[in-house]
Image 1 (cartoon, rainbow, N blue to C red):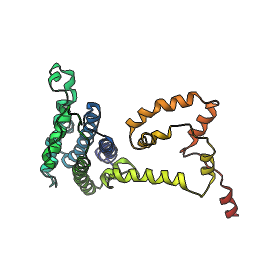
Image 2: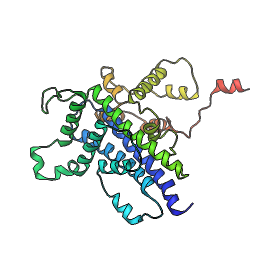
Image 3: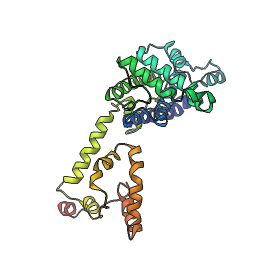
Image 4: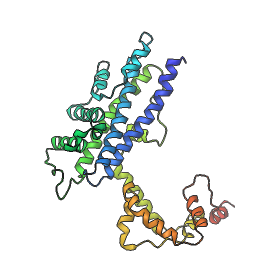
Length: 310
């Protein structure tokens, strides 16, 4: 394997994982949002999606354009761009790609964000138009869904409707899967394995799975019900049941459950956790036991299982 093949096989393969992680994080964060009114939250979503899809486009461009007679330095310089549509056009010059108007408009939104809105708040002109990325995203949803979204500053804000979540996931996954299909096909032609994905990775979920955030939420809820209601036992379950619960407020169960699906919700509850910990005696021993939970390097003896094995 020569240096160029090594580069395209391994380094671009690593980039594929990075691209998938950014894209997954953007979709996951959008699903968590209760509304579209907080600049930092909307920025986080669009930034992750912009970076993830841009890197995916560049992988496809390199695999399609790089050859022995191509000037390596010129090719690398041409990749110093954040224009998603230009990168898409470069892909289209070589292969057909099945993306349409809604996908192209979303790529344009990402490119505009990355080129202009990303640093716009460092300009004094931003005082008259403080939420450009939020407004751009809302205009996109309004056009694609034929809806009139609440105006910024309205009393109800802009709730993150399930229709917005469904549309964004569908558009992003269509773009990503089309590009991944092209990457797979071109890598196969070159006898490379750039398309390989680590099992269980975010990239695998985005490019080969459903990236089904609602289903992921069903999973933690079902697991929670299992832990609460199972009558079976094991060494691990005995260990968990042997740790006394903290005195959280039953009236705030809804807030606590929200911690399983939202990082923002965790931030609201962590102060209460710290207060409860301050009132504990022997905190060190408790922290040690808590640290054990979920550790991959811990094995719990199960007397019933040992008896069965005999």
